Picture 1: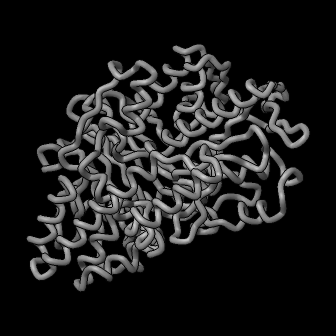
Picture 2 (picture 1 turned 180 degrees about the vertical axis):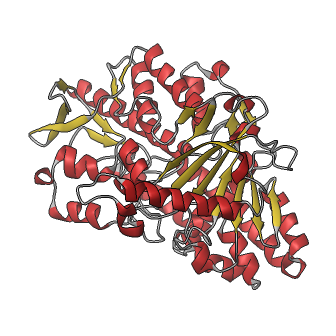
Length: 494
């Protein structure tokens, strides 16, 4: 989505733009796939940035496409279910009230936690509008000074892992578990800012009314082509061409070379620099940083078509975070019988995603790329009989775990698809199937969209401002501004 955003905005300004996409459809993790009459989203649960001033809303307005998509504002963005809790997240305030009813002794602490979420979110908004890569040296100094004065909570919680945040506010161990498990690909070692901002975003959650994730990707593709840009699907970039330390174009997998004034990579950062650019053009310290930096987790995704009336069973399409126990080690471990599971039922939000009388159910678990010796793939990397048997076994265990809250699920399955981290790696080329780029640890470096190679910029979740669809779109907006600023400066000088 970062690449599509950048390309469409540059095309709108009259630049000649080609988007090269390795997959058969645009969108990256923001895509859907169709099987046997069912449509399944791949990467997101809900969207932020669709309200006025948000990155998604601003971009589709600028591209003249606002009338071509409608977003459904979610009344209930999430539902936290465990052995003895069932909490609906209708808003940040609503979640706080639900928690106070469940944990009355923690009422004051819950109120304090909700206040901090709101205050932090208010600090983050202006930060995301700022683009350090577009600032002069003096503007950066001014920005840092304002940050030190006006963003005390961001500084405080940005240095604290989420695992310590919950225990800082709450004494009840069950409440700690509940607050640490609303996001399936989230871990206690990640910065507290992510957890607090995610909870604050519950007031601003949306979903495309028709077409799911693919509708958004297709809309941005239309924005690209409407303004004269081109997209080449099933087109893999083999190399970024470098001359005198400057990016001058790309070489495709078929060896065809395309010259260009600028290159923007929305691809995996490791592949961008270590494969497409090449270590010989980079400083050893930069290369080490790419190799040693931690990645976000990957996922194991089971997509099911079922002949069940989920609405009659009390489900409403809100993302369910299911915790079969209260042991953090087990919940954040890799045992499919004990780990937390995200449950998506998007056909309840968009009925066209399933045949009449049926629904979609997706089970998501954050299982690692190297699980069971890399999912028992063969030594040559192929996925044979043992791989298939293992992924079927893991899927069965997740389904059995979820049957505690969706009784009879197994016997009502009419279609199922299973994706492992190896599947995500193959279709998206994200290293190890990482779901959101670099791991957002408290001291992790936020990587610049500018690169060591002149005229090569980054967009997407591997660079500033980070993961989520809205952030990737913001990165595309930033990259477009960088190219336009740089090209204007060049033409003026010339």
